View (cartoon, helix red, strand yellow):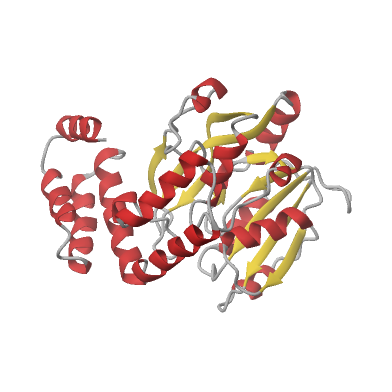
Length: 318
């Protein structure tokens, strides 16, 4: 168990209206084989039973900070300032940690201190917790990560363990980079720091319509233009951040997120885990919510093609 004031790792978990999943997320952290940590939860103005569920766990390693709703980036920055450990393990309130996640990452980063960020592969699950696919990252070795195009996010945010001081020195999470605060942070840090992704899946990432970062194809052209220009330049203005927030607030309704969730599940059950009947079920639900999106019909039609043909199309179309 950790010493009361000097844990080796801070597991940093922002939470907003996470009552459906946060209990399982917390339990997966508390059951880690590595025990010298604090679980720092930033309750970002939840209006559901999130806080009540957190309080139901009687474990001294849990530290709770309540604040008014300010968004993920602001919550993470509050957590960085309050964290007592030198290493931060990011984790989301709807995901699940594999039992040895902290042990493996802590032993790696302390054995190879030249690395600043340690990510990992992840298993993706649907809203009900059913396995969907194992996500293969674009780069594992530092050399591979450094060569990635700026538009490619090199890590699964909920999987990373990093050195706190480096992130704080780089200004923490930029609150203007709305919905891609992690990608923006990596774009700046990786110019002068080493990183890697472990090939072993250490977490389960839950796709669900409440918190899903919607598929790029569901973003507006204006949103994507701002996102990728700011990533390329590694700079973003407050005005650009306000525009991103305005666009997202207008377009990212509960109906849109639900439709994006169904479409993403359908696509993954074709490309990553070939189950065409299940994919079609998801696409039917996506079409029902958004009958005027042609891409939903195309995915449904493609689902009748052989797996080899689908994989070929995915490869050439990106």
